[in-house]
Length: 262
Image 1 (cartoon, rainbow, N blue to C red):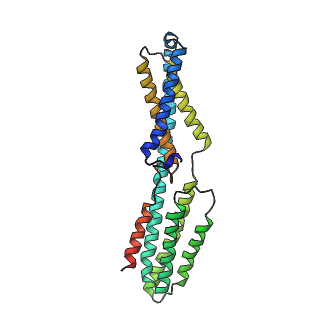
Image 2: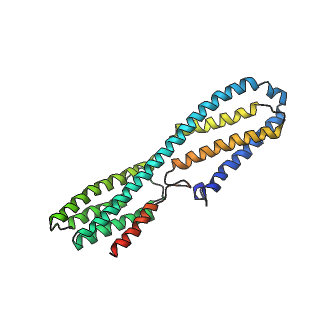
């Protein structure tokens, strides 16, 4: 079972944070056994100054990365809401079409939403257009050809629907393209190497009280590992404990059922 199949994000985070703390603490104990405290104290002036520089640089990079992935996650959520709103509008406006066109439009929209929830959501995607969903999209477009425009009012609703149909397609493509975006290998190399370097500097200090030294190292290692877990979670927008769920699509199905009964 993968990390992001865990029951909750807290448990998933603990799977990352706790082993990191234990490993870093054990390494510190070994360093203190091998190197006398007096030898470590000789490093304090240079190590403290260098750690200040490294810590500032790494905190800036890590903070920028968190803001970046959080902003991207928020943009994807907004795109999903836009897509769901367009679908709901199209389904509602189909009530003003002739019965044959209305039924064709609503059935194709239902098929699309069901496909997104059941087959598309949460499954890893390669960087290519899903051909199966393209067939459903084609049915949606073709369903509008079955609409007979009998009066001017219906023409107005039809024109509005065509405009929203374009917006719906744009939102879908934006969502799909966003699902392909990830932090590059170079960025992850900087984040992980920066974390290792920052934690390693804790081993250059020699505190008289080993317990206090272990606690400080554990706090630094735990906090950094949790931040990296957060970045990884937000970077995987549609997966994991922080992944966006198809709540909006489930809600519009409830609206479909209500509108069908009117």
